[in-house]
Length: 58
Image 1 (tube, helix red, strand yellow):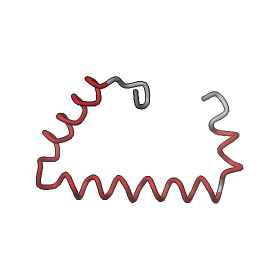
Image 2 (cartoon, rainbow, N blue to C red):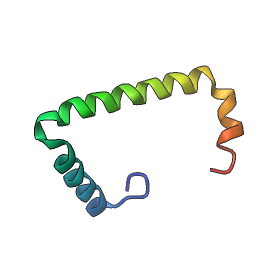
Image 3 (spheres, rainbow, N blue to C red):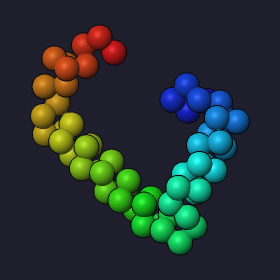
Image 4 (tube, rainbow, N blue to C red):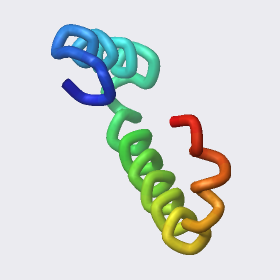
């Protein structure tokens, strides 16, 4: 399980993403998602003290 999703949900999500972006632009979309993930990690490291106020209920 990843993020509360089972195997079938992840497979369906992968098929939907492939259908939306197409096979040609899928690597570029994955690269951009990786960049956004890195950016969010850097922000979390830099402003980690803020996350305790916004993510208190999670």
